[in-house]
Length: 318
Ligand SMILES: [Zn+2]
Ligand SMILES: [Zn+2]
Image (cartoon, rainbow, N blue to C red; front, side, top):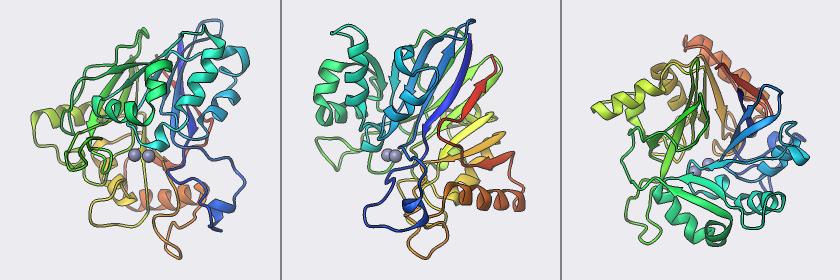
């Protein structure tokens, strides 16, 4: 069996902004909310398994363009959600309804998310959760920096381990906005000889990623370290205070220094939070790659850095 990861989208949360004429908003390349597919091929090269991580806007368009999922090759074994925010869940209904038409009328897609996110999704996507998805909740609300048990996915040779993170404005109870309920997870995808980390969405705190103190945090950082590919949400270029919903490039550099990946891949770019006239405002992905690589070299940061492309393929060595 051969496994590869591909990106269904890399932008968000705002994609093109209504009423904006920056280079990103006037560009012609297709944008989609951040998402990835883990696709497994059998020895004949046929699609044998597919796990979809996050289902924001534009993701189904990526799936139908993937050569291993197009037309009747489509299959979807699991949906895995980092959290409940709309830019990660907007196309749940679209993917579930269309895929059901290919399967039997009562087919429900197994779906993993943390309990806090499930509470929100029952409210925001009640119909989908009730009739189209088969939710598997983690049953916990652990604080950030905790390794959770591997996902209950039967895919020989692949282990997917969730790690809890904090993400401002997602870590709240749907019934009481003043009550903290940790709802977000990132994922370590491991084969015998490869490690890929999907580290989104995290807020600009998560200091445990840089300076772990408890035994649980140290264990989590150790497992996240030394990845072949580290995908990380990068909301803005400049250093912002106070706490922001996403890490800026400043945080990304600190995290990369600790986790020492071979390659750091910037996702969840928007180009807008830095503000008009400021560095990074409206930057294209190519501009982001150039600017980030310059800093990487100047600061002697580990490995390479760049913005990946939608549809790009990352082979996982088994
Ligand atoms: Zn997001
Ligand atoms: Zn989010």
